[in-house]
Amino acid sequence: LFPTITELFGDVHFFDGRSLMESVKIRQFDDVFAFTTSFGKPPAISLRWREWHYVYHMYQNRQELFHLLRDPLTDVSGKKDHIHLTTFFRAKLLNWLREFDQLDRKSRSIDLRTLPKREYDNLKSLGYIN
Image (cartoon, rainbow, N blue to C red):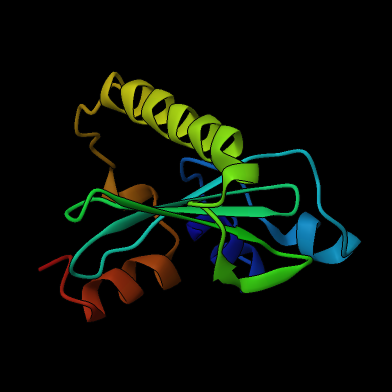
């Protein structure tokens, strides 16, 4: 989501992922998977692909599947017609989690002298820099 938010505000930053603004502009479903996570309690992971939206609630080990065109508010994950699709999304999610776990998470240092003054002042006002 961060790449989308920064594009909305006209800033270019390099975050994992890509902006979803192009999908919004075309106003049709694309063939790209969009993974999002909630930071709420309890946390959930969400995948959007084509006209489908899959949500996995981690602590409850509960999943939901929504057809965004037919009825975006009704969970169809338990319906016999959609068992294969629910299994497909679950496998995609587990694969994504496996890949994410293997990422290089070394902390990176930034030379603060190279930041634009506006960016430096903003980080300082937020308390990230003393």
